Structure formats: structure tokens, C-alpha cells
Image (cartoon, rainbow, N blue to C red; front, side, top):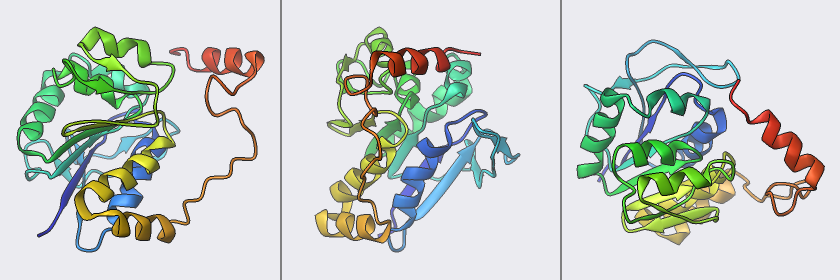
Length: 210
């Protein structure tokens, strides 16, 4: 059986939110990985790199795994019924409905987080409660068919988690080894709890909407 993964793309999507799970999913033998846009026009991510959607909301097949990445472009979509309608429709038939970073806010806006445990980027966790979710400060959080990941780099952990759920630990570990995913960061400031007050303040300032 062919597994169909789909990742939403939109202006100012966070590059690694999409690219991390994309690399993991595309390493699964025989998998289809669809980059889904509003149109087939190229879309700029948050650092200016352009993505080329391969399918649109109207032509996308039913997905086994729907993944909604985050980024600065999420805010503009929180009341966009075309995007939210696509998410709701795909969610009905998907085995897993997932997000990375602030993509979980779009799942919330689509009404999919009510009564669920979920996570997001540390700077956006508080917003999850507005959608009826229980905010959980973890790298990857699963609640039934809902799987949400924390900020940016957690998308790789998330991708491997999804592969493990669908195909077992051996396949997930094989993909992990293929990607040589063995994190050993040079600094220990990757979470608010680890960062110094100065670094945390600088990061919060940098993450303010421009």
C-alpha cells in the first residue's frame, strides 16, 4: 500500500518546519509526498527560499498523513476558510493529522484541537488554550490521530515518530540512520529552560511580528 503524505505550503512558511518532515517522509520506500499549495505558483518561505507546490487544495488526493507546518505566515491564515476547509476535509479521512511548530494553531482554527493535548513552538504555547487544547511542553505530543510537534527542529523527531507509528520502529530507525540524525548541539540554549535570561530576551524580541 502506498502511503500518501501531504505538507501544506504557504507564504512565509518556516523552511525547516516543512523540510525536516519532508526529508523523513520521502525516505520511506514507495511513499508519495505531496507539497500542497493554494495554487501551483511558487511560494516564498520565511527566509526567502522558494517552494514549488506540486498539487493544490482542489487536486490533492486523500492523504494518509496531513502535516501543517508553521511560521510567520500562519497568522494570515487563521481565518482563511479556504485553507481551514481543506484541513478539515483532509482530516476526516487521514490516519494522522499533524503539525510542526505554530502549524498547530491552524489545526486549532480548523476546530481540530478541542479537548486534545497538543504542543507548538515555545513562544506560541499559550495560544493553544484559545482553541480548547491542553498545551503540553514536549517535543512531540500524540493524542489519538493527532500528532503535534514543537518548534522548527522538532519536525525531524516528529517525522520519525510518524514513520514509527505507520511502519514500525525498524523503518523509523533506518530513516534516522539514513539522515544521520544524531543531534549534538554545540550550545545548550535550545529551550527557554536552558537559555540564559539574556538569550531568552533576545529571542523573544526577535520573534515579535515585524
